[in-house]
Amino acid sequence: EVQLQESGPGLVKPSQSLSLTCSVTGYSITSNYWGWIRKFPGNKMEWMGYISYSGSTSYNPSLKSRISITRDTSKNQFFLQLNSVTTEDTATYYCARCRSSYSPMDAWGQGASVTVSS
Amino acid sequence: EIVLTQSPTTMTASPGEKVTITCRASSSVSYMHWYQQKPGASPKPWIYETSKLASGVPDRFSGSGSGTSYSLTINNMEAEDAATYYCQQWNYPWTFGGGTKLELK
Image (tube, rainbow over the protein chains, first blue to last red):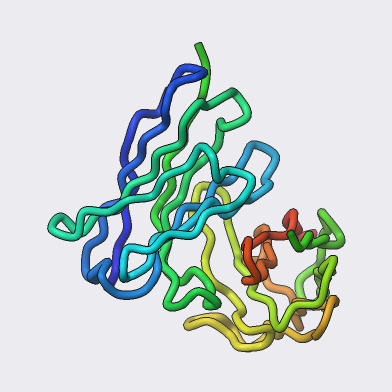
Protein backbone atom coordinates (compact mmCIF):
# COMPACT_ATOMS: atom_id res chain seq x y z
CA GLU A 1 0.00 0.00 0.00
CA VAL A 2 1.40 3.38 -0.96
CA GLN A 3 1.89 5.88 1.84
CA LEU A 4 2.96 9.51 1.58
CA GLN A 5 4.25 11.72 4.37
CA GLU A 6 5.03 15.41 4.22
CA SER A 7 7.72 16.96 6.38
CA GLY A 8 9.27 20.38 6.77
CA PRO A 9 9.17 23.58 8.80
CA GLY A 10 5.82 24.69 10.08
CA LEU A 11 6.82 28.36 10.20
CA VAL A 12 8.50 30.36 7.45
CA LYS A 13 9.32 34.05 7.40
CA PRO A 14 8.01 36.31 4.66
CA SER A 15 10.33 36.60 1.63
CA GLN A 16 12.05 33.32 2.51
CA SER A 17 11.65 29.95 0.80
CA LEU A 18 9.26 27.21 1.84
CA SER A 19 10.70 23.73 1.48
CA LEU A 20 8.78 20.50 2.02
CA THR A 21 9.64 16.85 1.52
CA CYS A 22 7.24 14.08 0.59
CA SER A 23 8.50 10.63 1.56
CA VAL A 24 6.83 7.79 -0.29
CA THR A 25 6.73 4.19 0.85
CA GLY A 26 5.20 1.16 -0.80
CA TYR A 27 5.49 2.51 -4.34
CA SER A 28 8.24 3.86 -6.56
CA ILE A 29 8.13 7.49 -7.60
CA THR A 30 9.64 6.42 -10.92
CA SER A 31 6.09 5.42 -11.80
CA ASN A 32 3.03 7.67 -12.05
CA TYR A 33 2.79 11.35 -11.17
CA TRP A 34 3.51 13.02 -7.85
CA GLY A 35 2.04 16.34 -6.97
CA TRP A 36 1.60 19.10 -4.45
CA ILE A 37 -1.75 20.62 -3.52
CA ARG A 38 -2.48 23.20 -0.86
CA LYS A 39 -5.58 24.11 1.08
CA PHE A 40 -5.91 27.65 2.33
CA PRO A 41 -7.72 28.77 5.46
CA GLY A 42 -11.31 29.07 4.29
CA ASN A 43 -11.12 25.81 2.34
CA LYS A 44 -9.95 26.91 -1.11
CA MET A 45 -7.76 24.21 -2.69
CA GLU A 46 -5.05 24.84 -5.26
CA TRP A 47 -3.06 22.40 -7.37
CA MET A 48 0.55 23.58 -7.33
CA GLY A 49 2.29 21.18 -9.68
CA TYR A 50 3.61 17.70 -10.22
CA ILE A 51 6.68 15.73 -11.17
CA SER A 52 6.22 12.77 -13.45
CA TYR A 53 7.73 9.30 -13.48
CA SER A 54 10.35 10.59 -15.95
CA GLY A 55 11.23 13.66 -13.91
CA SER A 56 9.38 16.14 -16.07
CA THR A 57 7.41 18.80 -14.23
CA SER A 58 4.23 20.78 -14.67
CA TYR A 59 3.37 23.82 -12.59
CA ASN A 60 0.37 25.98 -11.97
CA PRO A 61 1.01 29.16 -13.98
CA SER A 62 -0.02 31.22 -10.97
CA LEU A 63 3.12 29.94 -9.23
CA LYS A 64 5.43 29.34 -12.15
CA SER A 65 8.06 31.89 -11.26
CA ARG A 66 8.29 30.79 -7.62
CA ILE A 67 7.88 27.01 -7.59
CA SER A 68 10.21 24.09 -8.09
CA ILE A 69 9.44 20.39 -7.67
CA THR A 70 12.36 17.98 -7.68
CA ARG A 71 12.98 14.42 -6.58
CA ASP A 72 15.52 11.99 -5.20
CA THR A 73 14.71 8.58 -6.60
CA SER A 74 17.33 6.87 -4.42
CA LYS A 75 15.37 7.97 -1.33
CA ASN A 76 11.94 7.74 -3.00
CA GLN A 77 11.23 11.34 -2.06
CA PHE A 78 10.08 14.40 -3.92
CA PHE A 79 10.33 18.00 -2.85
CA LEU A 80 8.55 21.31 -3.03
CA GLN A 81 10.31 24.64 -2.97
CA LEU A 82 8.29 27.84 -3.05
CA ASN A 83 10.28 31.05 -3.12
CA SER A 84 9.52 34.56 -1.91
CA VAL A 85 6.63 33.49 0.29
CA THR A 86 4.09 35.90 1.73
CA THR A 87 1.39 35.49 4.34
CA GLU A 88 -0.91 34.43 1.51
CA ASP A 89 1.08 31.20 1.22
CA THR A 90 -0.10 30.13 4.66
CA ALA A 91 -1.87 26.82 4.04
CA THR A 92 -1.90 23.11 4.61
CA TYR A 93 0.30 21.46 1.99
CA TYR A 94 -0.45 17.98 0.73
CA CYS A 95 1.54 15.66 -1.48
CA ALA A 96 -0.40 13.17 -3.56
CA ARG A 97 -0.14 10.57 -6.29
CA CYS A 98 -1.88 10.45 -9.64
CA ARG A 99 -1.86 7.38 -11.85
CA SER A 100 -1.79 9.62 -14.91
CA SER A 101 -2.05 13.29 -15.80
CA TYR A 102 -5.84 12.98 -16.09
CA SER A 103 -6.54 10.63 -13.18
CA PRO A 104 -7.73 11.69 -9.76
CA MET A 105 -5.23 11.97 -6.93
CA ASP A 106 -5.72 8.58 -5.36
CA ALA A 107 -3.26 8.67 -2.46
CA TRP A 108 -2.57 11.64 -0.21
CA GLY A 109 -0.25 12.51 2.62
CA GLN A 110 -1.71 13.66 5.91
CA GLY A 111 -0.85 17.29 5.18
CA ALA A 112 1.70 19.75 6.57
CA SER A 113 0.52 23.01 8.04
CA VAL A 114 2.77 25.92 7.07
CA THR A 115 2.40 29.41 8.46
CA VAL A 116 4.16 32.37 6.91
CA SER A 117 4.78 34.95 9.58
CA SER A 118 7.55 37.13 10.90
CA GLU B 1 -7.89 28.43 -16.30
CA ILE B 2 -11.19 26.63 -15.84
CA VAL B 3 -13.10 27.92 -12.83
CA LEU B 4 -15.29 25.43 -11.00
CA THR B 5 -18.26 26.78 -9.04
CA GLN B 6 -19.91 24.47 -6.55
CA SER B 7 -23.38 24.92 -5.12
CA PRO B 8 -24.50 25.06 -2.50
CA THR B 9 -21.48 26.07 -0.43
CA THR B 10 -23.06 24.63 2.70
CA MET B 11 -26.12 22.50 3.30
CA THR B 12 -27.73 20.33 5.90
CA ALA B 13 -29.56 17.07 5.26
CA SER B 14 -31.53 14.68 7.39
CA PRO B 15 -30.85 10.94 7.49
CA GLY B 16 -32.54 9.29 4.53
CA GLU B 17 -32.74 12.51 2.52
CA LYS B 18 -31.54 12.79 -1.06
CA VAL B 19 -28.64 15.22 -1.54
CA THR B 20 -27.38 16.79 -4.76
CA ILE B 21 -24.22 18.89 -5.06
CA THR B 22 -23.55 20.71 -8.31
CA CYS B 23 -20.27 21.71 -9.93
CA ARG B 24 -20.34 24.10 -12.87
CA ALA B 25 -17.28 24.67 -15.06
CA SER B 26 -16.45 27.91 -16.85
CA SER B 27 -15.53 25.85 -19.94
CA SER B 28 -16.42 22.38 -21.08
CA VAL B 29 -14.48 19.51 -19.51
CA SER B 30 -14.45 15.87 -20.46
CA TYR B 31 -15.19 14.61 -16.99
CA MET B 32 -15.01 15.49 -13.32
CA HIS B 33 -13.44 14.03 -10.21
CA TRP B 34 -14.86 14.39 -6.70
CA TYR B 35 -13.18 14.18 -3.29
CA GLN B 36 -14.51 13.86 0.24
CA GLN B 37 -12.72 15.51 3.11
CA LYS B 38 -13.50 15.31 6.80
CA PRO B 39 -12.00 17.61 9.47
CA GLY B 40 -8.42 16.75 10.31
CA ALA B 41 -8.11 14.27 7.45
CA SER B 42 -6.72 14.49 3.96
CA PRO B 43 -9.03 14.43 0.94
CA LYS B 44 -10.11 11.06 -0.34
CA PRO B 45 -10.89 10.26 -3.96
CA TRP B 46 -14.64 9.67 -4.05
CA ILE B 47 -15.96 9.72 -7.58
CA TYR B 48 -13.69 9.72 -10.63
CA GLU B 49 -14.27 10.26 -14.31
CA THR B 50 -17.69 11.73 -13.53
CA SER B 51 -19.50 8.60 -12.43
CA LYS B 52 -17.11 5.90 -11.22
CA LEU B 53 -17.07 5.24 -7.48
CA ALA B 54 -13.67 5.00 -5.82
CA SER B 55 -12.88 1.91 -3.83
CA GLY B 56 -14.93 1.63 -0.68
CA VAL B 57 -17.46 4.33 -1.58
CA PRO B 58 -21.03 3.26 -0.77
CA ASP B 59 -23.33 2.78 -3.73
CA ARG B 60 -25.78 5.35 -2.39
CA PHE B 61 -23.37 7.83 -4.00
CA SER B 62 -23.52 8.56 -7.70
CA GLY B 63 -22.06 11.06 -10.12
CA SER B 64 -23.28 12.42 -13.40
CA GLY B 65 -22.90 15.25 -15.84
CA SER B 66 -21.18 16.43 -18.97
CA GLY B 67 -19.80 19.56 -20.56
CA THR B 68 -20.01 22.32 -17.99
CA SER B 69 -22.42 20.82 -15.47
CA TYR B 70 -21.71 17.95 -13.10
CA SER B 71 -23.28 16.64 -9.94
CA LEU B 72 -22.73 14.34 -7.01
CA THR B 73 -25.83 12.72 -5.53
CA ILE B 74 -26.38 10.86 -2.30
CA ASN B 75 -29.48 8.72 -2.05
CA ASN B 76 -30.45 8.25 1.57
CA MET B 77 -28.09 10.51 3.47
CA GLU B 78 -26.27 8.83 6.36
CA ALA B 79 -24.42 10.40 9.28
CA GLU B 80 -21.04 9.28 7.93
CA ASP B 81 -21.62 11.28 4.74
CA ALA B 82 -21.27 14.58 6.58
CA ALA B 83 -18.10 16.09 5.09
CA THR B 84 -16.86 18.63 2.60
CA TYR B 85 -16.96 17.59 -1.04
CA TYR B 86 -14.76 19.07 -3.78
CA CYS B 87 -14.94 18.72 -7.52
CA GLN B 88 -11.73 18.81 -9.59
CA GLN B 89 -11.05 18.98 -13.32
CA TRP B 90 -7.88 17.75 -15.04
CA ASN B 91 -7.34 20.24 -17.87
CA TYR B 92 -4.15 22.23 -17.32
CA PRO B 93 -3.97 23.80 -14.84
CA TRP B 94 -5.92 21.42 -12.65
CA THR B 95 -8.48 23.31 -10.58
CA PHE B 96 -10.83 22.56 -7.70
CA GLY B 97 -14.25 23.79 -6.83
CA GLY B 98 -14.68 25.83 -3.69
CA GLY B 99 -16.14 22.91 -1.77
CA THR B 100 -19.58 22.04 -0.41
CA LYS B 101 -19.86 21.47 3.30
CA LEU B 102 -22.56 18.90 3.99
CA GLU B 103 -23.81 18.68 7.55
CA LEU B 104 -26.22 16.31 9.22
CA LYS B 105 -29.50 17.81 10.38
